[in-house]
Image (cartoon, rainbow, N blue to C red; front, side, top):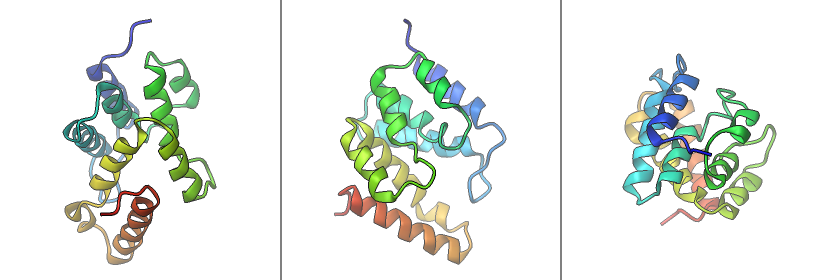
Length: 148
């Protein structure tokens, strides 16, 4: 089985999220690109970079679990994407425990949180949303052991 290249994974992710925007109204693919860059900058490997491109695809229903299961990706990339996919009604503690239990997932989540909590991104949101998200991201970082 031939694995998808990073360029192919990026193209799949961009197509899957086509027309979607983030909370600030920016194209969602910009967030995916920033997380992939963050993973690369943190020394992540190609499997983690591929997972960064796909980290929200199943959770956001841009791609199905069936697609992920059958995709030409390494088992590790699939496991990281699955670990980063929050289940409906799932407690944050269970979600973060799964990330910590999945080799390679923490680095991708760290890059995701760093971009989500970027002050420039948060500044574009109304104050109640900004405060709610900042609190959520801080709690997630603490549960993942990412607090300094």
